[in-house]
Image (cartoon, rainbow over all chains, first blue to last red; front, side, top):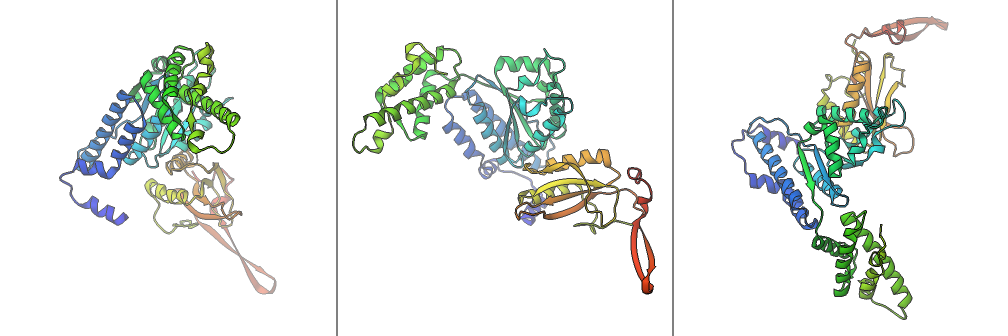
Length: 304
Length: 139
């Protein structure tokens, strides 16, 4: 295999076929998967497609000997909770792997706790350990703004930031860093750390889901757990979404997932109490509207 | 005199890229890779100083090369080796060990002969560099 690769390289390449490269890289599969498995998020998908084509074209240019700087791939995902940032990051890691920009394509998810130490001299080794683990893949820092705590000048977060910046710059070929968090807080974080802003090429905003999208997501989730809605329970779910969205601590798709988990709980209870004699699979996987309507949300309470 | 210990020691020194590939081979086999250094090149000096912990959970060799370069910054004039440790048999088993950094000058070894009972000869070797105290052997 290695020999083949060398032979290919030694041939003088005068033209490239982008379509062929596209097919060979398997990127098409990931983009299609992105389209199918993620509902809504149109601006995000567009940005990812743009990025993918840029990277593909870059690779093609490289083959023809047109010099480019290796592109900066560090990204920032901002959006409300439950808008699919982590899911997209995972897909991104896979995409970059297929395109050959990261060697292993694994995703390491960390938060402040994993990077910042508790006493002097603890932070640097901790941060480096995480960075080393992420090399060859993607480092996903959730709620990145917690790294920076201006109110405490002895906070070790700043140290972690400095090491991060240094490695992001010097080991650009070894890892891709994705920062994620709420929009407003991220903006503030970048304002106070201009070094970060300039080292991140792609800022992607994740919009909130509309009611219809959330209902679609609910259906997909239910289907993936081998349950199904009927007409009434679907209507109940739509109403649930409408009411829940106005309540505090609404976390988009994550709230929907939790609601479904609780509905399953109530469904199990109902099935257990009402079952006399043998029951079939369809009965076991049917979510009735009563399972959803029993939620506290309908009586003015809050589901967390 | 060039010290030849471990694998690849009769080959020219590896570049970082070559080290990367060797280490990646170890990682892909599920071996834990670690970095060790010493300034005592005696062949019976088996236990070298550890540079950090063995890296058990890094899927990519870039991490090892990164640490190696950190180690070179501090102990650039020492011997540095990379060892790959296979834990699957349940006992200490080094699968691969190779030197990745050496002093610019290696003075070699002194061979001394001692005549013992019955006119037998006992041989021993001492690195010339170990005449000096530890830490000031290579500059």
